[in-house]
Image (tube, rainbow, N blue to C red):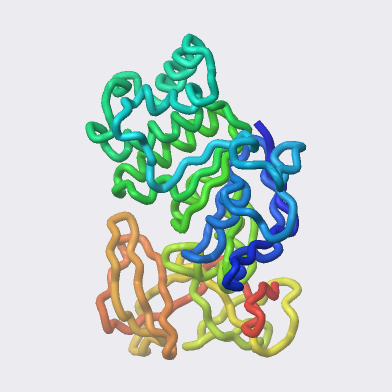
Length: 354
C-alpha cells in the first residue's frame, strides 16, 4: 500500500473551464480519505487525475514514492471502482472478479486462489457462478469491489460507489466498506456528494468547492468547526444556522434578543455572522404572560429527535430537541444558546473569524 501526494494540481479543459485549482493534499498510507462536495465542484476530476484518466494541466501526483504524472492508468498500480458497476454481463461473478488477473497473465492456479480468498473476504462464496443479471445491486457492488481488490493495488479509488443503491443497501455497504478497509489497511480515496457517507466512512474529509479545497480534517472536526460559511452550510443536517450578530456589552447580540458568548480572540469589527448548530439551541415556552421572542414555523418529528423551524426576527433557525419537547406551528417560544461558543465568520470573505 502507499500514500498519495497531490501538489499544486490544476485542471483546465479546452473550453476554458477550470475544474481544479491549486489543490494540495497529502493522503496517508492506509487512510480512507473522502473528497466531498456538490456536483461540479471538481472532486471527480481530481480523482480521475490521480487515476490517470485525466491529464492535469499542471501540478504533481505521487503514489508512494513514484511521480506518476506521465504514467498511463495501467502503470499506476491503482484500482478504481465506479458509480456504475461495469461488470461484464456475459461473465459469471468468478470470471468478473478474476478478469484483471487473466488480463495480466497471472498463472491460473494463483488466480483461482486469489479469487477464492477475495470472495471469502467479501462474503461472495455462494454467488460466484451467477451472472450479473441474477444479482442484486449490493451484490454487484461487492463484486466490483472484489474485482478491484484481487489485483492487490497500492491504492483504491472509489467514484460515488454507493450512489445507485437504495437507502437500506447504502447503510449496509457503508458498514461493510469501512470494515473491509479497516481489515485490509488499504489506502482508499472516495468521492461522494453525500455528507453522511463522508462523515461515517472517512478518516479525513477534503471539502471541495468550485475546484478549491475549503477544508481538510477529521469528520467531527469539520462538523464542529467549519472553516468557512460554505463548509458550515454544506456539512450537517440541518445545516448550521447563520445569524447576523453585533458585539454588545460583552456578548454577541443576534436577532430576537438571542445572546451568544464571544469566542476568544474575536476581532471587534462589523460584518460578522455567527454559525450555530441546531443542537446548540434550546426552545422553551415563555414564562408568565410574556410573549415569546420567536415563533414556531414547523415541526419535523423524527422519532428519536424533533427538529423545529423557528422564526427569529425574520431569520429562520433550526433547533434540535428531544422528542419530549412539544410545540405546534405558530406557538410563541423563547430560544436560548446552550452550546459552548458559536463559530463566527466574516460575512464578506466567508472565512472563520474566531
